[in-house]
Length: 170
Image (cartoon, rainbow, N blue to C red):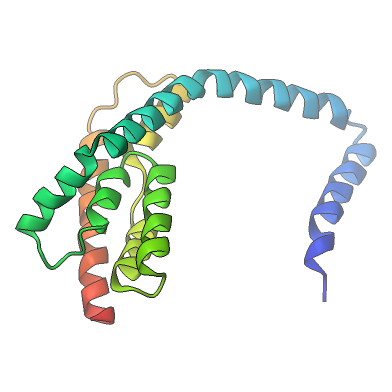
């Protein structure tokens, strides 16, 4: 049985052996890839920073709690702690993951809200993040119907996650 501690060094060794056999300068290609990565980081970082700042402002100002209370008044059967995750999931994976971890810490991993948060995390994607990052990185200016379709699919994923949680865990 191959040890997991050996997989990454073996993979790197295979890459170096193939580079030697094909007479490719692996180091210069590696350095060029790092330079391209820094360029992408410079393009993407301002949008990520702005997104993280706005999420932190909503959380610290109490607006997030007010929105959760509003949603709870309409859909009281869904745990109150889930609504911030439902709001952040289409925007930022890290923000929704932070909300899920907070649910785990306060209510527990095996709580109903924890199970629902886990299913939502796996059932949806970060639509706005994907559109912002990937479309911008390849220079797409007109997103056409991508945003609407992505948000509809997020709504469907969140709805099904909630229904499946009630079906399997209540």
